[in-house]
Image (cartoon, rainbow, N blue to C red; front, side, top):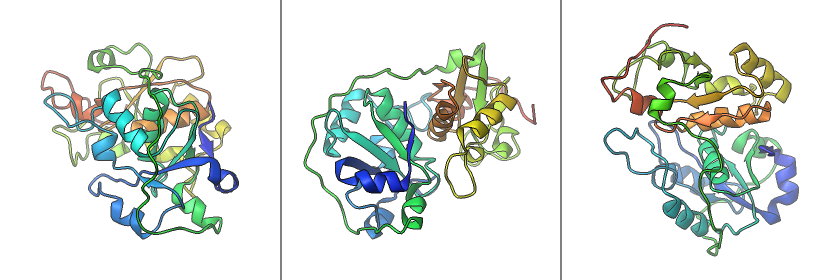
Length: 272
């Protein structure tokens, strides 16, 4: 599975590529104005809250996975056909675009890639942006489901392998909790902040460096590995980084937002 594409590679192939702009961040979820002000030519804006997540319900966490029917309707509206190459990006190191990458791969699209370095890599390479909205002709993609592994809350509680917490270290340690009901982490989880997947320029670290990083956390090729974050968004980015390193990993979609909402689930604090 090829996970990324560089800005020069994308520029050479842009005529045959479907582009999705997934600008979103915690506290500033609406990236549409930024998209309209300047995006890679042909890129369709993707609203994470409405198309890459279901409405949260009691006990589900903040960003439940969307149903296959909802995602398929969105994918066709984005102009994606069966067999297309799809490239996703954002303006924050692909921390949100990783969610789209994971969902589309999980739904059976075979060639989905993250623009390595995101929008910054495109502009740094000297390539132009366009403004306004992009409304493509509807596509015909037919999605499946369950192509990538997931675990639920009970499996997270008894996970026999390595459970990585992709949130910032201070949230893992329970020093701060800006959005979820309780501070701390799932007992036994290991802190693996998503930001440490990236080099200073926002591109993924090389595969060898990622393998070294995850090996230091106890995760090696062939191991049982699962990942969670606050609500299942940035954990997908770490799954992409693990894949670059040659390590398969499961996503816990409910993540800390689901776990911390259940008063019967224990919360650990401090460094492991």
